[in-house]
Length: 90
Image (cartoon, rainbow, N blue to C red; front, side):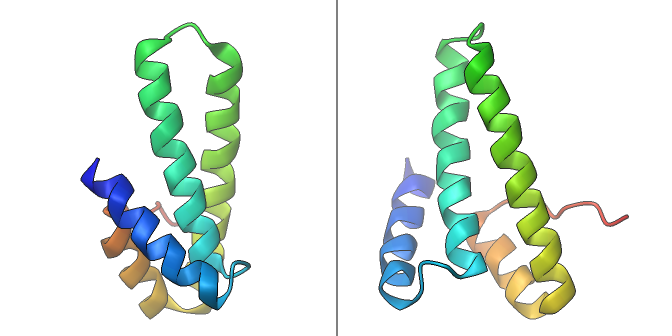
């Protein structure tokens, strides 16, 4: 719950600035991922939601890879704010 409230506060601040920014998109995807994960803990056989979760995870991973290439400082800040693991570099 604390993470979701943190994301909602950050996303409101970001929404006023630029909703198309990479950071805001990663924030919103992370929020959706957390909601779907909690949903799937209750509904283990919901395969359609599992597919949606995998698609959102892939989108977030691609955005993080883009941000890592363009600006590593912003990438590190975003990773630390969201408390998510770093993606494996290829």
